[in-house]
Length: 307
Image 1: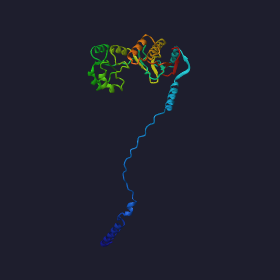
Image 2 (image 1 turned 30 degrees about the vertical axis):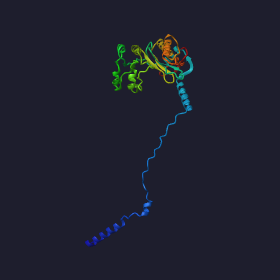
Image 3 (image 1 turned 60 degrees about the horizontal axis):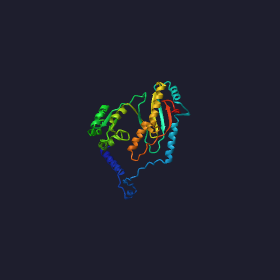
Image 4 (image 1 turned 135 degrees about the horizontal axis):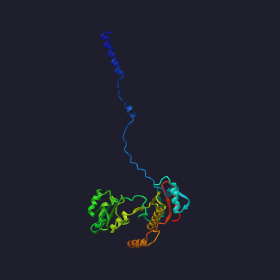
């Protein structure tokens, strides 16, 4: 193929290719058929609120929880304390370090506080908790707190240090009535959620700082739950039966005094003091004891009939 003829063929092919691949303009009729994309404003939808359970549903849940709690209780017969200890010891024969646990169920009439108290068992079932005590006091009461063994003692100058977290390792905080107003404004929201804010109801606002520290250092605290159940370890499987019996009886007596189920010279004095402080002269409500159980780690709870 000669040179001129080749160039003519190339030009002809190029012109043909341009005609076949030419982009034609869009007609107005095509505009109407195309889809228009536009952004619409965001609609604010109300967040769905969770419906509160009805009273019927709450009652059903309470029955289910009670039925579930009954599954771990031996309900065929009640036993004496000595027999229950022997049965639990036989069940836990391979676990000499297992713990006896006493469960006292109390009724919770409307308006009654959660049962709580302190006790010094004849033989402790577990090591006592180590306390670190901070006391807001001044003058003579500050000196008494230092002699009683308080770890940190001071007046209102301690407020900022506590607020900054410099004494977060303290497990108990006490205060005298004369200083409680000065610390409650600054520390109420800090110590309240941690359960450390001093209060008259818990006995941590008192003039008898020395006596409170002495009771705290030699006793163990017990506290019931919202349903009125009080649990306390009362011994190990390797304890002699006599030691377990002494612990059980001492704890039950302590709970009866704290819940108003027994009256003696101590409880009468406390009741008189309470009536003297109260404006309406009302007597402390009683939490009746409805059942006493003795259980262990692997064994079910056994109802005790002679306590």
